[in-house]
Image 1 (tube, one colour):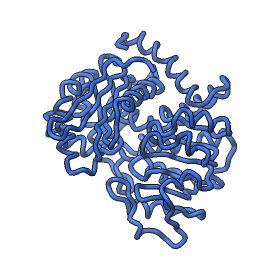
Image 2 (spheres, one colour; image 1 turned 180 degrees about the horizontal axis):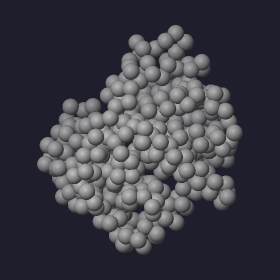
Image 3 (tube, rainbow, N blue to C red; image 1 turned 90 degrees about the horizontal axis):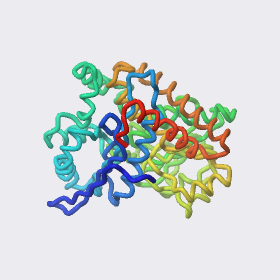
Image 4 (tube, helix red, strand yellow; image 1 turned 60 degrees about the vertical axis):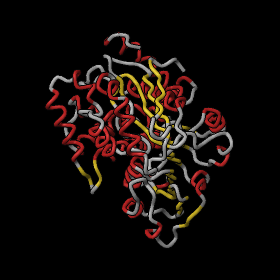
Length: 392
């Protein structure tokens, strides 16, 4: 991994907890990357995520589009978001990071934090917006901000559009892989770990595409049904953290231990919660043909190597879960309007093209999809730097 442009560690004077910010690189003086809050978050983790953001931004570079990819960054706070001290800690972190957010770090929701909470805390910390650093790059700032606000107000079946586009992108990546392999959707079973924003939307889109979700896992354990789960009822029964009320289970639904989702009979696994959940010690339990990384860095490198040797394809996070970030910028820069139909159509088209390109490159190079995606991004980074200046 290359050395990031900036890496800092902050210690909260009130609680003694730590927060981190890593700016991997800047493009036109600005970087993009969400803010996560989880117990055990480390600076090394945040650095890896920031590098991943640089790659995601580069993968979505289209010289004909209004949206110009930014640099990569990430923030992290070592705290359980359910902790009573979490919100005050978040406000103090944002207040400390205010100069960076005002100048060159655009951020938003990530693991453990919703955009609503980030926005509320940002306002309390004295910020205009968590993405205000990008405003000077806009041709019509007022119109762009209004368009993004309108897009965030859009709901589809009672769920905010901003909570759905990421899962739409994950689902499209999975569908592209299935189509390339000639695997019928109706014969494809899916297990999802994490039924929060990303996992829940992914389960919904895959179900509506004709796949069968046979297992979902949350903090309480795994819920499984080989005949298929009622995804909509489970989504309606989850709390703000993606934990499912077990009263919503139907006859035939079984409660299993937490890691059971790894080894259920399914063709596709979707880790959509925390990082590092599949490692060398448990990868042997995986029987699926594909793993779609809806979460950031859920598969450790040594596990991925062993999985590849067994014929399991990992669809990498830098491709699979990149639609949420891209949707923000497609909307803000004006490539799409504040419309669910436009958002989903553009997301599907872009994610299908990117996934197809990645899988084709992997086949041509004889490498993994992750290596192929990184190669594509590394090809584009110098092109972006040449066009907009070398800010790293």
